[in-house]
Figure 1 (tube, helix red, strand yellow):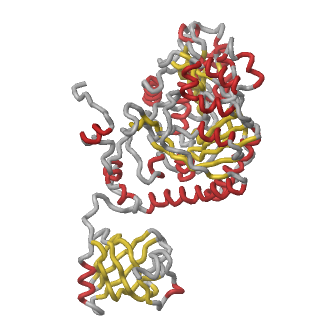
Figure 2: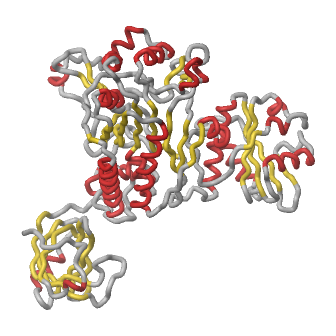
Figure 3: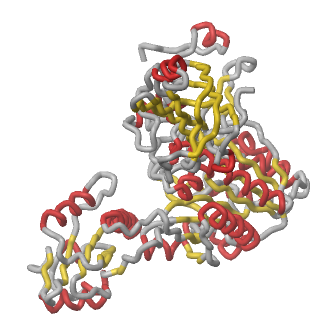
Length: 585
């Protein structure tokens, strides 16, 4: 056999045993007539000892070992004189008697250590080496553990796991699809699913009652730290349930994950409406780990001074930053530059320092008296030593979103976004529709199958922008981890929804006729939810990017630099697909 034990399991109780280990050489150290080798596998590290006095030939072989050589060693377990409390096997060592090099290795392009010297690009190119690092492997082990907990929990709640197809029809309502040409149907294309949405609804029509799937999904969109072109959802659907049923069940799943993975007891979670979240935090995924809630100041500045920027603004909002009145001019200029960045888009920043000695210093003190600015202090709930930062604009929601970026920036600067603190909540009562500047029309905020709030159905024709959705998002630490909604199960209401979205009857029939037809055969009331598994793992692992909990991720350009994909197709393949490329274009 290649091994009798792993490199992470031997203890003092094994002293005197003859064992065989196999793994990779982490490092070697020659000290006098002895050579020490740290042997690593997935389970841990064991120190090997080669003694020149016992076997010079064997010791010479050990001295020729390079980093990441794959080897097999036979020897006797012995108690270490100089113990290493940093590793689980630190009380023992293996006195080597036989050495077999299973596979030599080139010198790796970066060190296989927790604190590696490899940058992102080189580690992604040699991802199979990066995955040998304990820090990366632990992320994958945590992901595995989470999926086991999720599967066991959902199984205990009578959910059945069903695989849905990856080659489906394109539904351009939403993000861009990845498309796949069909050789047997020239000129026609499959799409890779952005989610199994319509398929899981059909499973409810089929009477499956409770479905789940750890589902691969695909979206052809611009990437960032929490997005990949392919990602994994914990995808679920339930029949004969209302919103509270779904929220309560999946809150219990989240409670179990936090308890078993991080030892954190989640309390009963707050439910906050979308309008309240936008008003208080400028975000539908507010980070509740710290305060600095928005204070609306339009009324407070009315009738005071004469500052045209405020006088003409539709919205004025401020945040109070505790203890930061001592910020220097350089620091304040940095904040002004931050809000003026294109990603934020504000025109400028107003500050008011309420100094510890009771004096007031502001960027607008030539427009307002000290007494007037002290009145703002009371409205803001500020104390001496605090800094108030204010943004204004002619669009309330847009300005709130800008102020949200500033609030998060201050949270980062002050170290208030601790990755070991978890603040979760549900956001409910989303708008059913949102205006798309690109499309110049109303779009479904979530998707076109979301149930409108029954109280708002009369508004669908005249004021669709006022209609609330029976939708809910699970938010943790300012990140949308998952969300779902009650679904429309009535054909007439679904047709009305398509009309509001600007679908012709022909287009609705072409894209979703199969679903509409299914609803005519006794569709139950149903609802669902999907968590982003990658995001959930990254939060519980304390990662900055979901890439570190995906075995083989893409880079920010959507490329797999290890496989060098996407790549060009052979001319013969293109001909079989009847695709002609206009390279000049």
